[in-house]
Length: 221
Ligand SMILES: C[S@@+](CC[C@H](N)C(=O)[O-])C[C@H]1O[C@@H](n2cnc3c(N)ncnc32)[C@H](O)[C@@H]1O
Image 1 (cartoon, rainbow, N blue to C red):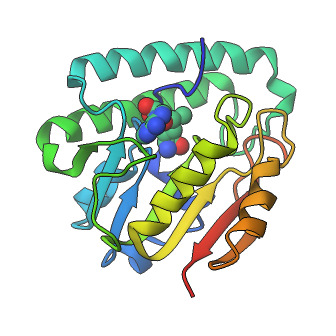
Image 2 (tube, rainbow, N blue to C red):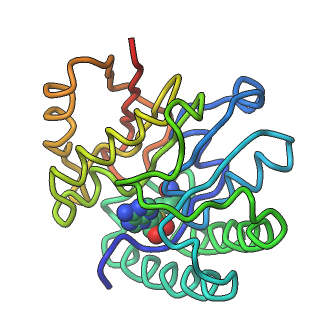
């Protein structure tokens, strides 16, 4: 199966991989793109936050997304069993536990997608359907850098420009490593070429993929 897969991490994984504290971000306007079937948006909505999830797949019906998520999660879990040693089994103790927790996240997402359609916006990260500086905090995980063998520099450059354009505060991107655990060359290229923004790599307390504990924080000066 070709990536990117339509799956989603749990809100607990989001808090760790983006180094977030619920109380600190509750009052911010937040964008998650691509949000997939993550439970981050449902969790933040339940706490009263102003959060928007954006994904290219959000034109589909909830049932279609739910089926796709399950199918992709089964595929991912099988694939992980074959390369178990490339992953760190502290957050999840086994592929089965990961499957169950992310399937639960998908159920939360499907429920929320039905109940709060206004929070789920269909859009392409290359041309986001939002005005400049619409969000205080923009999160982006598991599309950029990790698929750099399929998505070229033009895609990365354009997507990062868009994430920065719609943000008035910070953009956070995770992970920075490719599927083989090496830092994507596009991270340094971005930092070199977009010297008009402040960009720094920070270590986070989440390392599921080995060497995967790095996150990029971008701020406009
Ligand atoms: C692996 S999921 C990541 C979801 C979530 N951020 C997470 O970390 O769990 C990748 C997502 O990227 C979405 N996607 C792929 N290409 C996209 C594009 N050009 N614009 C917006 N979303 C895209 C897919 O539909 C999928 O939901």
